[in-house]
Length: 363
Image 1 (spheres, rainbow, N blue to C red):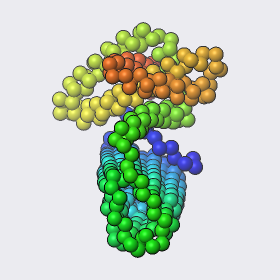
Image 2: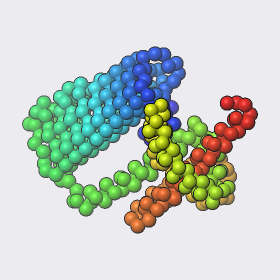
Image 3: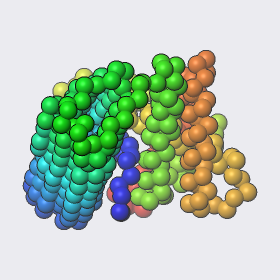
Image 4: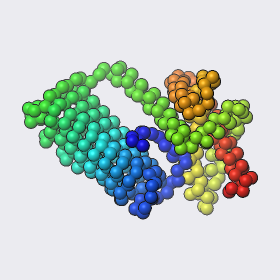
């Protein structure tokens, strides 16, 4: 895999525990858990999902990290993709860097490739060095360091007096920022005022729709590669028995949280109940995609069954779903309907698989 797709992966199928990645995982390149510390060399592409992630090792391939608190303090020979709430980055990256965060701090970092950052709050120290094109989208930014080409779109920006820019600086902000004189002497500076408020709102609305679309498409595109049988069986169950799946899904949707709450109030079952409750909440978000695919396949009835048909159905069905959910009066109704069908199809399919394996004495 040359480039790791920036994706939302199946949290509902992961086990929430503590993992310390200091032992030999062999060819394993997927880690998940609550607290994960990575302090060794990784030879393969690395995908990590968890609540608290701490990377202080090195990687020879791409790295993708998804979590709440992320601390990257290592090295990578190729690209690094990070998405989280509070993110701290330092170290050495020979490829490109892509970051999506709520609060971002970068210190003592060198990036040989390009940099793309989206974060409302950004602090970049004077020890940052970016050798290629750097693009930053933010609300409040404090920028220091050394850059070749720097593009910034933000509301408020403060430049460090020690900032160094070799070729060009482009800034779009509410007010024209104060640029140190040593920067203006040897770089081309372009300033544009911030777009009108109405235009900003229009762009942010489009971004939310795009994010919603991609966050539903990517997991199912990944399922085509990793778990095609689960995907096809779930879709087939919904298509063949829509009425039965609807009522089964509605019943399961109501009973599942009640059962999990009863399990959690017991001393022995509390940890297990909490794990499955988190999985249940994740499934509510994810299972809408199965219904989207079924909807998309209705428009490709004449197309031959296969991966191409599934991929087209994912994009078309998800696109229709996202557009329908933008209508205020029916948004929640549409979401509930899609959740019921998807949840029912997924759970019924897994129950059938379990019974089949039991019948064949495989489990």
